[in-house]
Length: 120
Image (cartoon, rainbow, N blue to C red):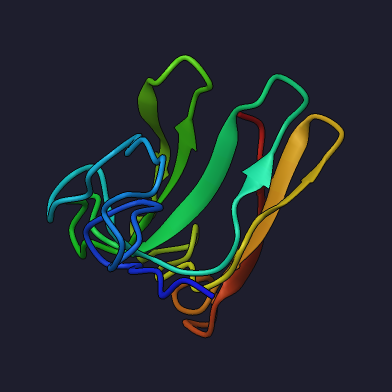
């Protein structure tokens, strides 16, 4: 079983450089988000979707929802503001129909998190 890093590098194992592996995106602190957890959601075209718990450079660096297209393009779909849209999305995403569903552990009307959906 491989030991996978979740901070700063997407889908890159810590050991065994002989693996046949292609890094799709290297995370850095800043607007693209950083610190990823949990599994990715995949659509029928092979695009990957996930959240980062931090980054995004909104007022609070409260995380992002991103897409990693099969062709290689990394796109931030939403930057959490820490307000009513939530913050710190510490969960995976569920892809159902035309939407992605997830949760954020902070923010929202009561400051205790939200359940959200987004159309990629």
